Length: 394
Image (cartoon, rainbow, N blue to C red; front, top):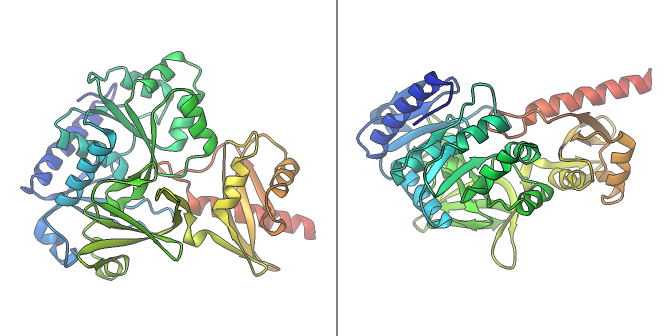
């Protein structure tokens, strides 16, 4: 196991891998990794009171949720759940191989690269993240992979940067991956088209810490995973579900339930099943903006913005408005003038859905796991709206 120019990272990962290997054999304490590379071990007796009554087996890992909408929760992932997730992934990808780690391991997507490698008996390769994610560091690590079958997990921002890199070696190593799992945040249609046009084998994933990470690949659930949509809200069920939240039995009981022998987790996401029974995620349930008594889907506005030429990324949300209750606001990555953005939105959205506040930026604020930092974006858009209102009333 190697990490270029990062001997401390190598030592930390070797320690984490050893602890995880013991944990998934149900022979040791559960593993919790921190952002600074630290390792905490939780004895099974310490976790017993946090387990849901119908959870099976011991706990292998404690993983924090991203905290993108509030205080992070610490999710308990069981040995059996991680095994079911790894098996389902191997079946969906039609084989096991070597993984390149390009994500932080204290979040579930990064941790799963290590766990899948352990179940497969393969050696993960660790890129140097000490200087942040860069195409050159990714390419250097990818060129060191030795197995013929190779995988990696990325978030959309990472893939976008890699595709934009002018160095031919970057695209060459991307094409050598048997699958590039893409999750953590919605991927735009333009990004997926660019990846397909470049000859990349991208697999979109949907899931969360409560489901051992991605459990729906390209809209299709993994083996032993069930999907249903009740009143527009997505629920996920099956063997990959977590065993509860650490020291939060009330929240565990609210989020998880069992029906006819199947455990279910009710997500905060909206979606639908298409005519081929593939899942289409439509955004978060709390992303509905009520403006002047009318409902607006923030995800729909975001999609409209990202559909404009010259807008690689955007994020729409609702912020307080004294007249309308809420107003639609958007942070947009672009060099376009605001009036052109507004005109583009007006051509495809109803008038009440066109953003009244627009902040143009060079990149969206992101959390370490690549998801948009919703709280930071909300605060910045609120500040921009207040400043604009103050200037108008001056």
